Each structure stands twice: as C-alpha cells, then as structure tokens.
Length: 169
Image (cartoon, rainbow, N blue to C red; front, side, top):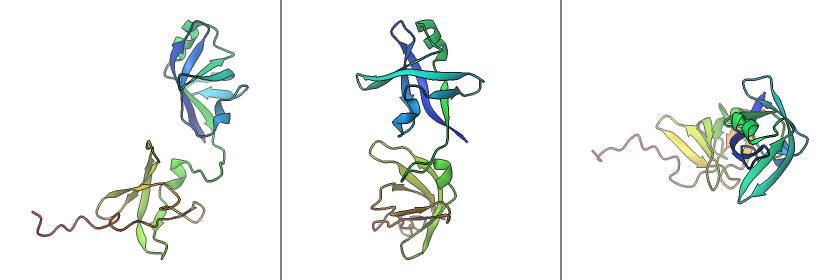
C-alpha cells in the first residue's frame, strides 16, 4: 500500500526547488536519492536535495530544473510504500480495533486518527458518542494490531456516557 510522504507546495527560487508539506514522521522518506511516485500518474521523482529554510522543508528533484517545472508540480502528492516503524502505526491499521480498558472492558471501536498539534487523537466510537483520546503512552499503553485490540487507560470522565443527561433539559 502506498502512503503520502509529502505534498508539493509552491516553487521556491528559480532553479526548481519546491516547498514540501512532509506528511511522515520518518525523515528518510524524503532523503536525497529517494524515488517518490507522483499520485495519479506514472511519474517518479528522484530527490536531489532537501534542506530546511525558515522552518520549511525545501526540496529539489532530478526531474525538475526550473521554476516553471516546479510550479507544474504544485499540489502533487508524493507516495512511498508503507514500511514498518517502531512504535508507530498507520491510521488504516488502527481503524476497527476494539478499544478496551486494562481490565478488559470494551470501551468502543477505533474509527480513526486525527492529527493534532501536541499529539494525535485516537477516535473511539462508543454507543453514546465519538470520544477523542490523546494518543500518548500514558493513556494508550498497548496497541496490538495483530490481536485487534488497543488498550486505553482513560482518566475519570473521558468515557462517561453523556447520552443519558436526565434532568438537564
């Protein structure tokens, strides 16, 4: 399965350099020499160089030599093959896992992952609502993709049933 490594932004300068919106925690996916597929095409781009400038990632590609070439690439999604990372999971691996407490009680089903500024949020569908759980090891100590389970040790109130608010009408 291919995943988005980066999205090409606007051109930077006159020699084909572009601003990249990197979508991976693994910096090696956009390292010099890497070959990235362009989504929806048969085109492949080879990373020539990568640098950081004013907190933005800039990249140049062997196949992109001018500002005009770079502008034509704007908005393109660069894809890489899925690869295992230690203590990291792809959203599609988490979706559908059964969320349980450390004692084994079922909390709900993982429906997705929402990227966050401080940490990602694990979305857990319960009968009452979708609960957003900070995806940190203190709250989510175990992820067992093969076993189909994620263990969540929620603080009090996180999974309270708010669907039964009697007397608050």
